[in-house]
Length: 476
Image 1: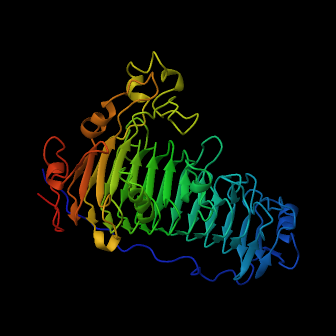
Image 2 (image 1 turned 45 degrees about the vertical axis):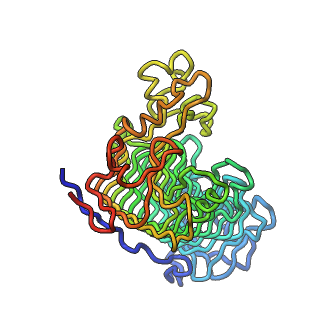
Image 3 (image 1 turned 30 degrees about the horizontal axis):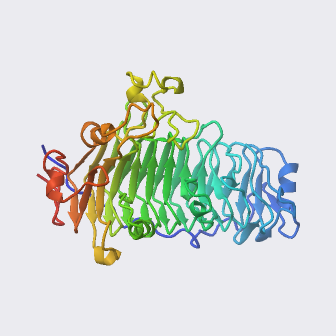
């Protein structure tokens, strides 16, 4: 079988924060001018004009009053353009800047800062309206999420920086987000509130978080320096294309794809990610393989419509991260299990009623009630690792394919080594045609089993056919 040559990613996108283009120096014809000298002028003029109005914010700091609920409630089709130096400032008082469920709202050329959204809530598009366009806009130094998302939302050439919880929280009540686009943005320094320390196990932090999004294109972004994961897709996401991004120096995973489906991850550069998390694991002697790309209970599923029926990881460059890719499936986590932290959710291939004691043991429920890590192809990637440059002595430079010994709950049909065997041998998870440089090791089957490259390639694992382990080009 012929294997593809390695296609390394380019250096990646450049800065957006503090590099926004100058625009809208004069108001467009027919635009309503907003005066920063009048407190609440933006909200008042929005309320007074019909849908589809264009508002031009003059240079200066625009405020929304001294009430925590001071906010702007756009109407369908409203457009907000910022003159150079136009800032909307919550002053640590207002919870949200732009709220309600208007459709097709546009924001361009603004800086939006210092709002105090509550946990899991957002400052811009607070109520997840559909069809919003956020372009050439800086959203920074807010509590909560800088930005929420709705269906068909486009975020382009914007700066999501130093927000307390997330830069973006792509969540909509009813799970109706489709067709999300993030293109050419800088997503940096988010989770300043250190939410995983505040609420241990909350899974509520990152540069961007995605929940039940069906269809997302994430391309050409610089995702760096976030205090936690860079991008985190959590629970029943599907059909993601993540390409040509630069992931750099995120404290934890660069990309965390959890209990989700059907992903293309290609042409990205991953550099010096997971160092904070990896060192924390090593310091406490935790041998779980901390990952730069972490695929957790996620896989390709042909029955869930998408542009692919696999998780395809190809043409990426990994350089001096704490680790590489971990494919993991928790044997105790499935629909209706108390170990399923996505409370109230079931897989996309089963209904909750079928995933119960007395029914889950039989097909098709036995297969369909699990979020399976399956049909993952890792090929044509370059993995470079220098332990000295990373500054580690143990539990680093690892690739992983594993599960745990199933024990819980007592009615689980997945006890023992069932899932360890399945993910390792039976679920079409395959590395091939990659190029490695450095002292890589491989955790396989379970966390206690670490092997060298020769054993990883040999039976019974038979991984990384046509791969190179001396830094050269892959091929057979």
